[in-house]
Length: 579
Image 1: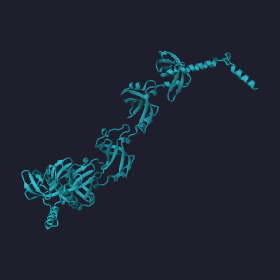
Image 2 (image 1 turned 120 degrees about the vertical axis):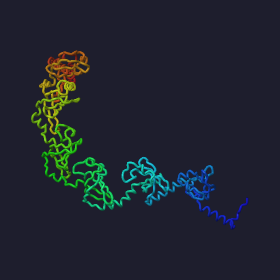
Image 3 (image 1 turned 90 degrees about the vertical axis):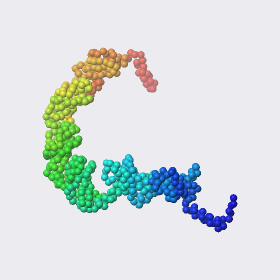
Image 4 (image 1 turned 90 degrees about the horizontal axis):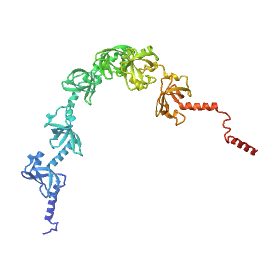
């Protein structure tokens, strides 16, 4: 092989120039889009020529069909492709026309987004949260959120499938390669010019004679107003519907209903008009000076809720009758059980707040407070007849005579001697009882009564007695804890603890007693406020022993014992030695 070392010859320089010019035309780099010329077409493949590559790349004919370029597959035509590999493991060049189209399409979308241009897209299919649309020019897929399909809610979007519309690019995710489009923005912008022209015809204070209810929400009603230039949607806020209280527009309106409106606000930037219905009539609160607090008035029930009734003093002048102001005695009563819409009832005005435009009323104040009547007729300490109406695990409730009041009778106030839980079981609903009034709280609407207070208090047995006094008791029973005893002449029972049966621990055995024995016992503790008494046989023995010692012992006792005087003699001897 001949090697040319002389590169200065004209032939060498011409060849070098030709080679450099050819390489400069095509910079071969992986990951770039380059143009390839179709040189050959078979049933399955398309062969391309790309200068600078050592072999001809091949594209599957189905790939061209997938991207809609089957019509451009002719010899001599150029096709943009993405150079993925200059040489794979088999030594072939790998290119993709589909990926090149996607990249170029994304680049065109980015450019349209930067320039604020609209793009043509075709509706392909419904998906969760919206629809998928295809960019007509690049075949790129974009997401259309459900809220951006139209400027008004659509129940069905099937009729849009296959249609081509203009869309606005609202978001581009460069990292994930996702794009979001909006049809609503295009529709809104196209209507803005017309809407601005329509709104310019109105001014604050104008009266719209006929507006049709288009829809409503929790905050107001949307009306549609027809004008020569087109229709316009206006909003009437919930607070502007009526001077009376309204919880939801569907209480007053129905779709398609016509209504007269007054324009109260115009926003030229947001292109919105606010209207009012209540301002078409005089404010009924201006008549509030005709009413006074503390006086009864007839009111009409217009709405009933769980917490009270909305009533009208006059048409448009509404007020709330709270459930707590319905009755003196019925707590947490449901207004629906007493009243119905349309009823006329008498109530007393308790408050008029002109600043807050609020009026408070009370139905119970039209009647005398039954607790005051009860206190006047049956003051504390009086006896009154009653009927048991209900009971729970610790008390009875007793309806007092003809008063609509239930007195509270605690189980501890049923009996002085019996156990509270046992005494409760002795009474049932409907039993008639005479009880004593123990306490009346008018502010809290409570009355406490007692049954045992009608009997003589067995604790009076201990009146005049004190600690260390001796009483006679009868043993009722015994167990490991001690003796259950009952003082003679008293209906109360007491427990003498095992440790208090005897001084000697050997004698402090409850089993020594079988029941029925009469024994003496000393009072070791007594408290009249707490109604508490403790008895002790041990204390009695100690008192008796002390009394015996004090009574029968002598001052000389013990002198005859050995060494009884030894200490005295030692003291005398010591004294003499010191002298």
